[in-house]
Amino acid sequence: MSSSETTQTKQSINFVELEKPIQEIITLTNKIDERYREKCFEILLNFYLMEKTGKPIAASVKEELKKKEEEVKESFEVPIDVQAFLIQQSIPKDVISKLFFIAKGEIRPIYNIATSKKSEGQIQVALLTALENAIKAAGNKFEFSVETVRTRCQKLNVYDIANFTANFKSNAKLFMGLNDKEHVELSPDGQTELAETIILVAK
Image (cartoon, one colour):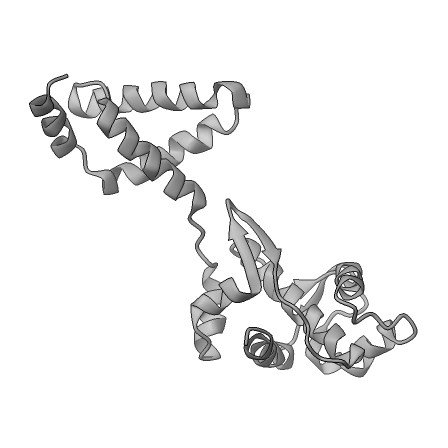
């Protein structure tokens, strides 16, 4: 393809408009064997562009689209409920990146607990674990599993085996549903405490 044809093809393609069909193609190709995904993506994209422009995808355009594909894969939008929480508490959105590493739809905690009081550290871990679960997917509640918190506390050296359960009961106003150990949700007081914990731990 000549340089003039390449330029014409580029001009006929709006990369913003391509974002949705590219995401749909990615979703489709992710369902098939990994060995065939890249080729399948290229074939489907070529087919789409042939319908839109009447021309196959040029190598230079293909490079641009590959970059766009990676951007779509890497992009992550904080769920609206978490965004609303941050706005209500006057917390900047970028604070999330100081607490968690997020890539390709996965999230991992990267924070440290500085307090020397294990009881205080345990509650901070519980609150931040609830935040993590809310971030993972739209519609998720600010909730945590007691066993997940126990494991995190052990890793972060704030686990008090003798008082672990009692510490939750002592701070019962922060939680709802302590009897359901897999789904302990933050109360309104708990969300307020979470806001303070975010600011403290993210320093």
